[in-house]
Length: 91
Image (cartoon, rainbow, N blue to C red; front, side, top):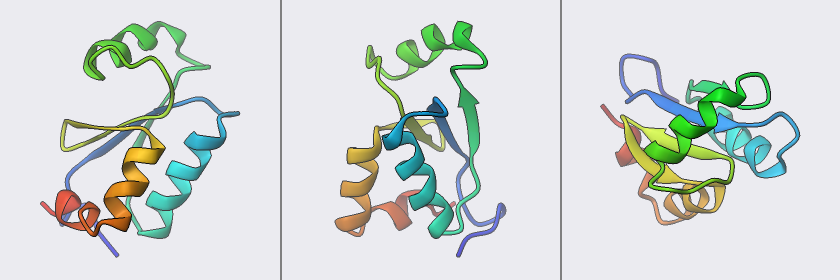
């Protein structure tokens, strides 16, 4: 389990009805990771910001750890299964 002092900030661009977004948030919550969510349904003007930060990727979720682009849920899940997510989250 992490606390805000022991992990890098996590940001996730998501929409409320996206199954992959829900799965990504569930994985992070299960690990005790707090994150900042940008709800693109409520703030559609921020989609251009997400696309720029995600190197042209347009799908949600797009996840950033410590400002570094991780990718979507599949990428986050792959990091977890490879044992690389915890070191990436560590501050």
